[in-house]
Image (cartoon, rainbow, N blue to C red; front, side):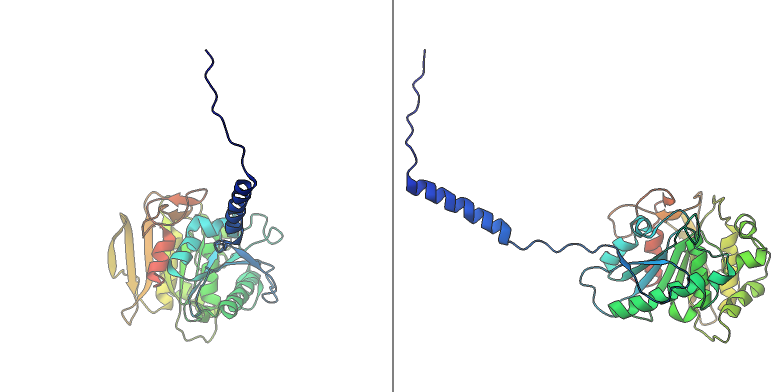
Length: 333
């Protein structure tokens, strides 16, 4: 049986015109609606100074960042680069959350085939020379460009970047309120040990006074204030031995005129945590000994208020985000 078909009425000219107008109106609505503002992204900056260390400069500035905000300098480790370190550590995530800008120096293979900052080369760790001078020039450029708060500039880094953090604190103490060394080494360690590898795997034999004198000699005549220091290091780090955290504590407590006895010993996220206070009672050195962690940056991926970072090579998920702990200590949040 054949079912009857429904009779249709051909569309009139008026109905066709109305349909066309409806389609055109919808299309114009899409085309004329303003697109949402693009999120901030990492940008390379050129011409930031004489750049004697031949480094590259990258930076991250959150959209709408007001003037007079802090600046964090974040130094990647060996085999890493600025973009990967920016996101892996969580620093750009926190910059958006808390409102500060980030400077990310990047090593070049012509300087070091493994992309390590040359923390062991005398010509790169002295004030006014090499890579240290290049990083200092980046700070000046950033402060000028974003009208940042020169009294709230901080420096941090992982491994070779951590060692370079100690370099910047020693050679340019007037530029930094505080530093954060992650799996790094004290200033002048390679020169004290006679070899960067001895320094990394064994440590250098120096007294606290000798360690402190190396810092003071990097900035002759400087009377302070010196940057405060926070150190995070894994107890199972076999690339940069944990003895280097002990040496950093001895170096910077001596610089601040403090003793080597912790004033606070407790736990944070289940890990041993210590605070060393200076003569004025303020915290000058803080340490996190991350039990069982190897060589890398502690991260805690997630969206909770204390979480940040992305797990990956040398970004180790240990339920503690180093960037968050540092930012908290520095009052960024």
